[in-house]
Amino acid sequence: MKNDDICEVHCIHKESINEVKSKMLEEETFQKISEDFKILADPTRVKILYALSQRELCVCDIACIVKMTDSAVSHQLRLLRGRNMVKFRKVGKMAYYSLADEHVIQLIKMETEHAEE
Image (cartoon, rainbow, N blue to C red; front, top):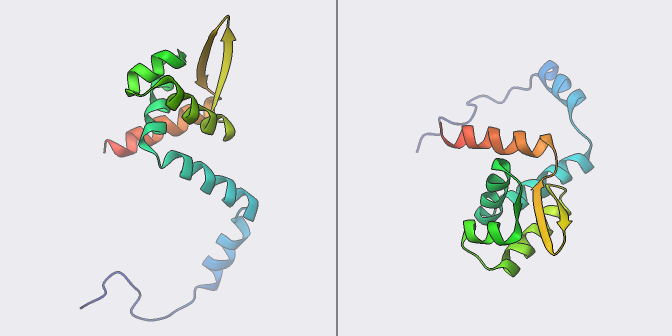
């Protein structure tokens, strides 16, 4: 079996390594990014984020869109809130959710474009 996807000669390019190493993030930042990707690994949570990228929605409406119970959606929303991806506001007895900030909006937009390529 031929391994075309690996270097055939072991060669270290010190200049390239030093350049990239100087730009590497702190370990804590990589951990936070990894945790965000873990949250996004669930299709239901991605559906919820996509729906919220369209407009603010109450829990009942989100549940209807993703075809789940209100309590199951609330659980997913708590996980997303824990990663600061969504925020909510109460209006009387209703809880309305939206994306937390422009970063999350851009994340969903970019990944949607990437997935549709």
